[in-house]
Every structure is written in structure tokens, then in C-alpha cells.
Length: 237
Image 1 (tube, rainbow, N blue to C red):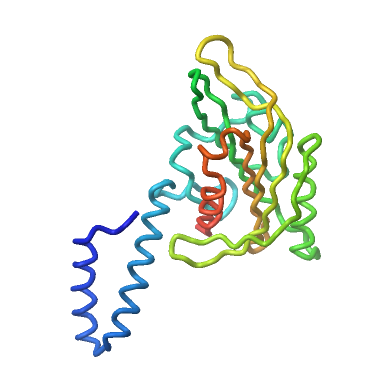
Image 2: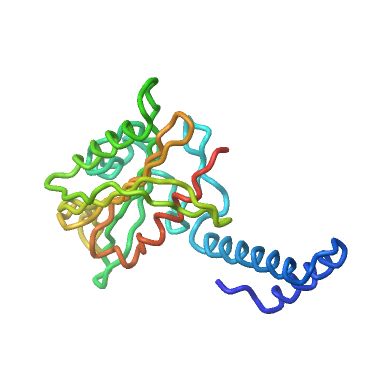
């Protein structure tokens, strides 16, 4: 989102006054103004797609900003089919939250996609990155016939523009996704999809953000843009 011209003008006056009072030169003033405008634009971008208030991750000292498109409360264990509550019916180690959203197709039917959040305790004496990679390898086996890309470093920006260190891999597979037709009974349909896994060590915890999205919804979800933004907003409470 571009800043309104009037806002830029007001900020310019504010920083100009501050520069005069502080004895700043023109170049320093322009640098500070440019940095502030960049931060405001970045915050606006995040605020467009993520909820403003951070969602606490249960039983941890962590929180993150949930995408606005997840309008319903997190799924409750036992309230929905286990294949909706956990990735393809296999509960993740340390799973804390499960979010579900639907995208409507041309026939009026709605297909679900998911974001799962897990936090795993780091065993004493284990090397953090090696243990995290073992957890990631275990997740890649949650889907039959999955083909996984190599685990890679994936810096994810915070709203202020700072980079946070995450590990990332994508798997492709065929699996069952929940579908609600315009008419008839809802159920599960087999189709091709991807899982995107983001993981990061924070203190003695491994935080895992695990997305499951049908291929045909990838553009609508804008996963390549949305997922790193969510990862960049994980923080200590």
C-alpha cells in the first residue's frame, strides 16, 4: 500500500522540524525520513493481510499474527474430523493450533486449506539445527508418496523489515482435502497439493508453521507471499 501524499507531506514537516532542532543535515534527515516511510509501508503491507492483534500460541510464551482470511476460531480437537484438525489425520508432535479457510470455486463449492502451528521442546544436549532437521524430516513423511525439496534457509522479514532465520521445505503429494459442495454432503476429495513447512529455533523451542494447500488454490491463497509474512510475525509475548 502506498502512503497517501498528505501523509508523506506531514511526515516531511515533522522530520524537517526534528532535523532543525537536532541540528541534522539534509542527508541525515532524508535518510531518517526514507527509513521511516519504508517501515510504515512495510507495516501497512502486513496490516492488509494479517490481523493486528497477535494470537497467543497455547502453553508457550510466543504469539503470531494470523491471516485475516482465517475468520473462524482455531479448530478444536474432537469437534471436526481428525483429517481436518491434524495434517491429513496425523497429529503433529507439539501441535498447538489448527486454522482452516475455504475458497469457493466456480460451481459454488468450497475447498479447505490449512495452517498448523506446533511448538516442540528442544531436548537437552541436542544440537538445535540437527534436531530441528530431524523434526522436519519426520513431517515430510506425513504424506504418502510425498516428494520433498531440500531443506533451505529462508529469512522471513518482520513488519519493521528485520530478517528472522527460518528453515523451509516444500513437499508435493496427492491427498484428501475437505470439500463442501453447494448442494449435497461435504466430504473429502483426493487432489494434488503442497505442504510448506517453516521452522525456527527460539530459545529452547522449535516453532513449526505447516501449511497444506491444494495446488489449484495456490494462486488464490498467494502462499509464497503469505507464509513468509506469517513466519516473520512470530514473536515472544
